[in-house]
Length: 291
View 1 (cartoon, rainbow, N blue to C red):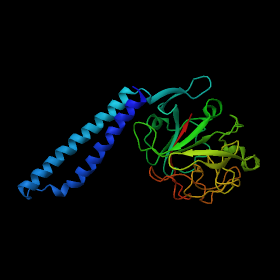
View 2 (cartoon, rainbow, N blue to C red):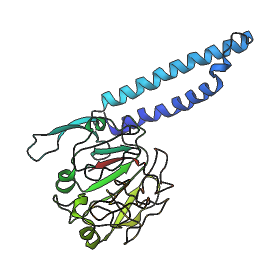
View 3 (cartoon, one colour):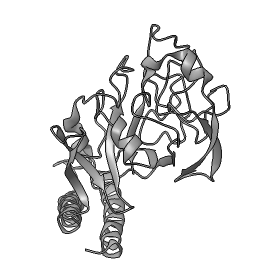
View 4 (cartoon, rainbow, N blue to C red):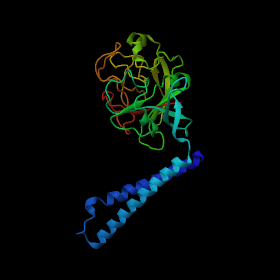
């Protein structure tokens, strides 16, 4: 099925959902009461029938989109060099081939030696919906270094593709498989690395310049080694309301020369918190994709 046809099918769901919300608002549980007048009760029952019908139509439309467009589904992908390890990962091929490599759905504690460098809870990566209070990822270092050029952070409210909010940027050209996203390299090495400008594109703002190093890790000591990271400035500071973002991985304690002053969580806290209103929340709610 062509992308144009899929887009038209998806667009049909919008008026259905809008009408569904209106009907539901007109007919609450308390509104239907056997003591109501016959006219009012009749109207309420008709609205309830509309709700059921519209829900069925929306469900059928989603199924038609996913069944007829083979590009919107999970694929079996090698996550080791010799393909002895394969994982089923959701891929959104409609926009050029994005592979879902990680998701975080809230406060998950210290994950700086696991996040994107080990396979963890990979089953949740079969769907783009972000689950609350859990994280999942693959060891994505080789994919990021050898087979990808771009990275994207996105919301996760859609069950048929990538979320509507996102930021993306090109990965550093001097990255390598031994050190990329590996906080164990230590603060001194990361802080000494050259920091370069990178253009950031997004779904909700104009292009802007942020900063990254070859490790893909935020270089400010007190930000806990957040990654993936693009910083607001050369020292690695964070601000709210912009498209320079970083996923916090250290909620407490110290490790490898890093600590956490609560300002290293420069990412969204929900599917609607784009751009993020806070950077001290310790509850990232975000999907990570590679292309």
